[in-house]
Length: 392
Image (cartoon, rainbow, N blue to C red; front, side, top):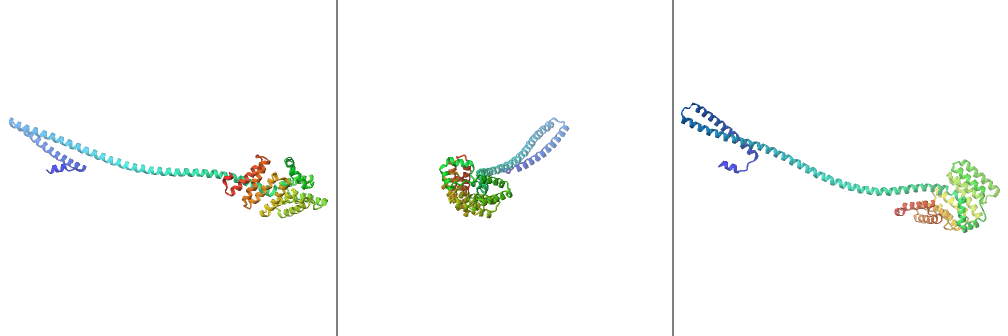
């Protein structure tokens, strides 16, 4: 009964193995006992002589042998069960090992998924950052080009507009004179009337060109004495209050300015201005040139407020004599715009540059270098105000 109860109960693998081993031990003991009995019966059989007894012993021997066969079969089955249990244990161990590997792989897979998602997010952010940087790069490249061009033009402006360029205001070249005569005959006539027949002598033009050449080479030790000697000669022959003396004073003043001798240059220009106003009139082009040279000198010294009214008066004279759409008026507008820009008067700067640009495009054509220079100056003004769209 107890055996049945035990069989009905659910046994663990270890309990089955333990029971099987006990059964094997019992069968082995039973087998040994049966072998002993069988051996005893064989000895008995060998000593018997009567047939009935022999037959009885043989029958018992057969029973014992069959019992041994059954025991052998039971032992074989028990060994098979043991081997099977061992195999199942091995399989279970492998199964547990595989399950552990699967759990580890699942964990690794989840970790890889998390890493992939995180990497994709970082990649997306990086792509957005790259796109933003590309836009910033394009903007900075554009700004850098504008800046370089602006610096180049600013350097040219400082050297040419605020320092050296006004040398050309004294003597317009022959090409400018011919264009003036062809396209602005009425303005030229008005200018001639204002000049009252005065014309700069050829010897002063030659001397002017020679001084410019020496000054450009830095040979001031030659240029200055040459100007002083010519000035002395003119004062002896024509007197101090003569237009030729004023012209020579302008030339010497600009040479001094190139040497950063601003005080001496200002004294000479003021003297020349007084002479020209007395001898040629308040609205003469030569007066405008001297006013412009004085304005440039003040601008060179950073005195933009003092320079601005001089530049405006020069503009008024040139508009009156040459007309409001003359290229020389556009040049004066550029100078005035630069002075206002240094004072952060950007609305006035825009107005002057736009006027100058319209004159250059109308009178000289869109391909003229002055058009590109004025456009760049206007773009620089826009950039300083943060008007990037207008600058582009």
